[in-house]
Length: 191
Length: 344
Image 1 (cartoon, chains in turn cyan, red):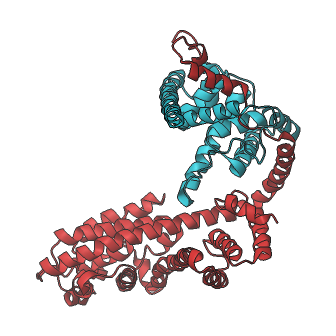
Image 2 (tube, helix red, strand yellow):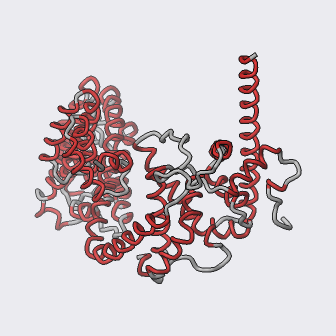
């Protein structure tokens, strides 16, 4: 029904959208906790859904916030489906996904660890708030664009951002504490 | 809110660690996505979508019917479970508390009809069937009413999934209603055995049926209305000639889910066997495949067959079946586990 009621954006437009924003969607999904084959499937789902819905149309939402909403919905739907069949996969140690390491070989170990620590902090945030946090803090989107893209009220965006920041700060401070105590132990052991 | 909040990375009270992590997050994508590979897959997906759009106009109704059938099956299973819980208790209470009371014979057959079919009966029909009530004994109205109402509502719910069936059985007369009630009880016995064997004496629908005809008919009329149909008049003279036809239809819902239940049980057993004895699991699944080639749990069965083949060392067969499975169910919850088995 939907397919008949919305204009077909055309395969070329949809592919152009894919080429422009697939990396963003993949990163966004990764930050929402998707991994490996699931991530690739979800990326495809997001753009196929966008195509079915008539593609992105310029408006208050930017392409990224528009796609972010589709990605969030796809991820949550997948999680609901999966939870009936199996426990969540515990493969958070993997930094890269889609079977490839990040392409830059000069990326330092410290940076990799920072990425992992960031992800661990993000994982402590509830998915809806995490999406807002990632879009605002990491992708530089405006709150208006996030509200339009995720179909939220502006006040809801602010409150989610507030909750996400609190969770993020708690997670970072806990992580720092752990590292401090671990470093202290190591120091004592070497002495 | 007057303006945009300050980003956390620019906040004065942010710690260095927070800023460092946010800077990494802003500068480094966590995934190096292969856009070319993804785009080629996306093109294939678009092509499949175009083909699927054309095919779905033909296949859509069938798929919708299958989905509706699955929903109906789940609904029925839930209803039977509830009936299985409620009726044994109601029956026990009936057996203990109810004493015969003269003068109630006329109401009972009507209520029997309502119990099993949710229909209204002509008053004349009730007068022709006194042995029903006398044989089973009479009962007080209060206690069994909850059982009757519960079963009325449940049968109505189950019937709501199949409006045409509900309409076909609306005119069921007393005799066939009685048989249908017995069939329901037999089925309940199979699924939820009555504690202490109280059913035959106390919990049969005959004894749990002391509602007045007027009350029964008022409530049962709600069923067709809920289905979007007009409530029909209470007396239906045309019901008599079709006396025996609807009875087998009423037993049909009791048979339908039992096949799926058997299938579900077999799947669960095979799943349990898989770790200890994959060969036996494989045999059981293949047998199940022959018995229910188009069952409700084909996807689960095929996934388990693949796991069983892999565990028994039949890698080529597992690979072949895995490819076929992924082709048929690319978004299956099993897909992530099966995908590695599809590659050599």
